[in-house]
Image (cartoon, rainbow, N blue to C red; front, side, top):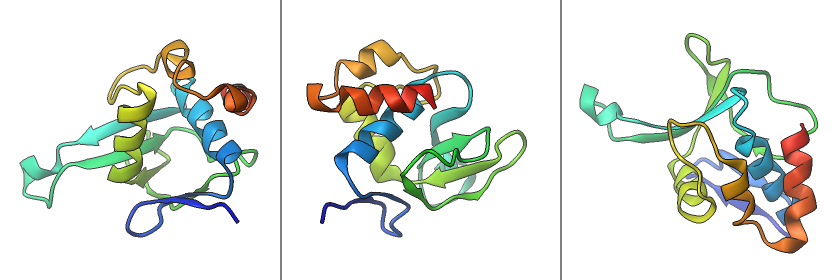
Length: 124
């Protein structure tokens, strides 16, 4: 059985590559529903920088990603703290922390056999 897990507390898990690429598509939309960020927590005396996915909407039921959400603040409804995942999508999929995502650039990083899954995530 396939399982891709990110984070020491298993904050982000996928049961198939299709689920992973669907989530990548969802995050790539750049429509303001999510934001990828590196928060400089170390500047305020905390442990270190924190890679986070901020959600400005409730987690869509259609997404098959298993996420360990924590409470958000302000306009952030929830967030997922996971340096390993944020590093993965920045390094491997052209995501830009703290910026609007370029879905065309991100799509070019997706293997052809998973483009339908990526596109499905864009449509959620």
